Image (cartoon, rainbow, N blue to C red):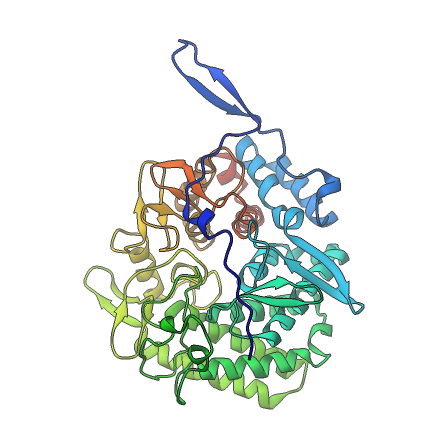
Length: 468
């Protein structure tokens, strides 16, 4: 099989620090004439002009107006208006192919479509589709494009928009990429009742391929086909004991694994396979494939029960981040989703799971090697962004999974004070200086920020927002 590879043009950008000077900032001299400060006009939207927006949803525009009227914190309202529609404004390319919906979603400054990112970028808009049929069609197009991508290569994580269809942009095997697609398709079905994405034959072909791929990555039956057919096979040849877990070559952050069984990704696989089984059973009446999904989910769940936890001397029983089946465990958490912190956000474990609650204390502490604390804030990073670089995604996930208003407020304060007055959420920022950051255009985190604000409004926490 021939695969297409492309160097990521944004790799150097993501690895370098960007220094920002706001175009909307006015230099203000202090009263004693000793210093100059920047004052940003929070009434000035940073969205593209209406004529330049890639996709406009009437329902989302109404929600932006409604929520902005409720929020008295000027900067928070400004950032919400900039961030919540950012995917629609700048990343969504909606059209029709062969008379059917098709949507290609940029990840932001990289003009390629990641399966994980595209699913996450449109996720916060799902609850609005009943009010906006064009929005529903756009998300339907994302799902159909993802199906095409999986059928092209289930081991690829990112795709470019070729002259006629998708081409492989990056072939990094990440278990969570397939899971994000299943999660989005299931949620779309539940929200809309639309079965059409599952009834033309593609969906069942997708699930046969997904099942085959996940079984291959349990590493039970001979050589790993991904390692044998990948230029990155040095990441895939790390040994594992085939205990029923599913291996990955790369983490959700695109970083290479240390131990191939990523625990939160395997939890995500369990919940995603069960969602797929429900669709196959209720929509397709395909008991055989549904049973295969449930059987694999049960097997992975049992293996997680046996191999995913460890007794920590400080926090008690907690989940490891990566394991290998031999008894080795990597104790850390990464900022990207799925993560240990995000397991309740994804619905993979109950919110009151005592092991999760212990793990939550561990990952937000200096016992997690990727937890950083500085003058500007604290949070979890990734090896891709380097030491002392905090990823706002961890703050967003912490707030989304918290039941403590003080904890949520602390996360929000850090989010609105570490944007370097750009009005957007970056990939990461330096713990002591938010003006040193990576990736000024990262639509996925902007969507997640919008999702958090909408959730807090729906949870009737407007006072929390306005007390910031």
